[in-house]
Amino acid sequence: MPPVWQNNDFGDQLLSRYIAIDGGEFMNTSREESLLVRVFLGRRVLTLPKLSEQLRCSRRTVARRLKSHGYYSSYNHRGKFLTISEVARFDSRGLWVCKGARFSKRGTLKDTAQYFVESSKQGMTHEELATLLGLRIHDTLLGLVQERRIQRERVGAVFLYCSRKISVNKKQILRRKELLKTQERPRPTSRQIIATLLEVIKHPKATRQEIVNRCKRAGVVISRKVVDVIFDDLDLEKKRAL
Image (cartoon, rainbow, N blue to C red):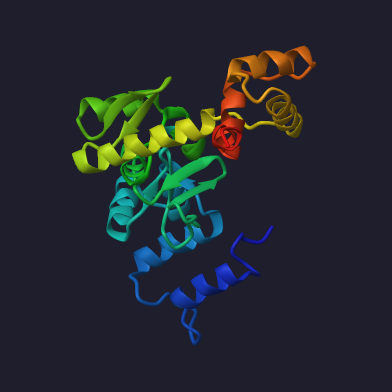
């Protein structure tokens, strides 16, 4: 099977960067680095023992070369998997998954979680971060809070992780509360709207709760919250006062 970078634009771009046309030698890099990059071009993600085997040198030597060249370690699997910027395909959020290994441009899991919490307009819950990063990170978030790198606030029924900067923190909490209000607001069905309007027409002086009861007796499943939304959206109080 050919290496993953062959026969595609991505591979061509990599090769044009490192290989000279006349001699096939790597350009703009030392021989050690060129060998390191060549191994990653074929595999994309490797462990330290596998790199040592491929480069035929000690793990200490491999670690030195990686440090010199620059690399990313996976934020899952205890950092077991390694890659380099030349082969990583980070998405717009700076994340990349390859062969089950997860990488972040921000580095460690802690640094990555802190970045997303800080940059979020409305803070982030554990579930949101777990979905984004692909693993549950309760302990990581707790560590960040204990290290005073982020802050945790209860908003509604969940804990919200937000910035420790007071100005940013206040805005995040406010936006989250506004979002919760939007999510909690019921959406009336066409049948509920029609039933409410009919009751308002037939009984213009009826209270909202009376309208709820009349709709239910007519076989329409409805709540006081739904009737309140219909009244607010259609401005019925003002209209029936005319």
